[in-house]
Image 1 (cartoon, rainbow, N blue to C red):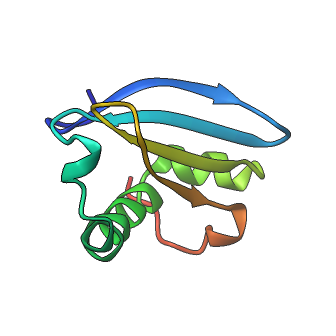
Image 2 (cartoon, helix red, strand yellow):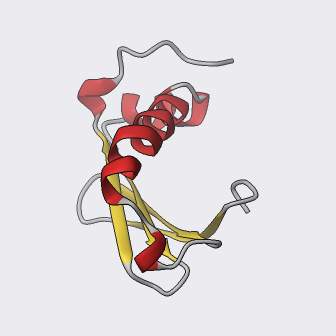
Length: 94
C-alpha cells in the first residue's frame, strides 16, 4: 500500500528510459471519480509529493521519465501522471 487509499500493483520498465507504476484507488469505482476534481485537487498534490522524494530525483537525474498510472477499484484508468527529467528543478526532500 502506498497509503490508505492507494495500492501499488506493480511497476514496469520501458519503453526506453521510462518507469511506470500501476496503482489502484482501492475505495473508488470509476463512476465515483469526479475527473474535474481529480485534476484540480489530487493531481497537483500527487505531483508535488512525487517531486519531493529523493528516489524521484535520482530517477529524473538519470534521465528516466516516471509515470504513475491510477486506476479505479473496478479497473478503469483514471489518469496517468508523468514526471520528466526536465522537471528536476523541484527541491528534494532528504
